[in-house]
Image: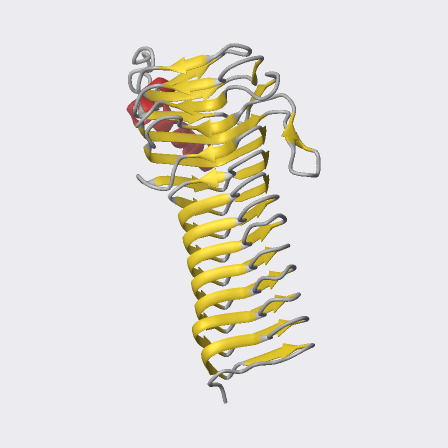
Length: 341
């Protein structure tokens, strides 16, 4: 009897207190409201869907390619207004124009606030090995034919096979080229105020020019490889009659020329220069911690001061310096030291 009474009391506790397990209102509150923003609310972007005709951008804003674009004549994209961002979205703007004609991306004269990123501009121009550039494709990759643009950024873009210029923005007005590659263009490779982490190879004329150039490689088949006001961690090469690398200040740079000076600078610090012809390996006013080699010219020529540097020549003077400190020069024919211990 005691056990039965206990069980009955336990069961009655649940049966007599239903309010202890109240569920509240079960009616739904209504349809859920949207909590996410649309892509247009985050960044309104306009698609460029052309696949074979010129695309003209006449209004400020953000644009992107949705397909490869191949034209048979003229330009690929014309940017005619300020304040434009163009995302190539990994696609290619190409040309089959006979003889090299038109521009991959053309910028209107004196245009400002332009960004172009992430894609390719491609033609079919080739070098026959003797600096003769012929074939079909664009005459210019990215180019402003009028007054130089301002506040322009080109990043992560490749340009190849153009008859004349690769990326040409001029060297003033805050123009920047970053992480870009230009190859096989008949004249100029990359021209901009600031150039970073980029290369311009197999260029018929001056391969690369900028005010501040860092971590770059310029190679010309017939002119100077790299020209800068300040060049840092750069390599300039000329296979023709130009200077390998020329700068006002060259820091940790290397210059190579087949016939002219390997490296020419006002100040060369921690640099290396080679001339395969009758010119100097390194020619600078002030040379520090550098090495120069020449077949028949000066290995190192310092018109003012050379510190802790070494020059070698297989046919002339190894090192010449008006004032030298801890320097040495070696030559297979004759060695000269001027005012050096």
